[in-house]
Image (cartoon, rainbow, N blue to C red; front, side, top):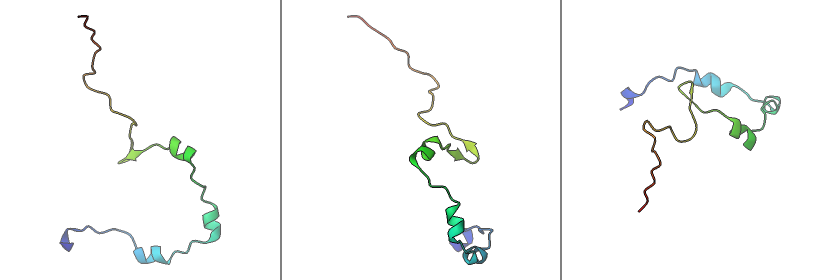
Length: 66
């Protein structure tokens, strides 16, 4: 089963050795609800449209008087 796993392709030991200081954390802006509201979702580098997708054959309103 381990043969099917791919190689990560990064140096994890170097990543673990990297030190993050208080100055580095101070540079990161706080993520607010407004920030998430403006965020654009990407899938494979392409922006994804929000909401329900448009129907290929949209319904048409019909009225019937009995």
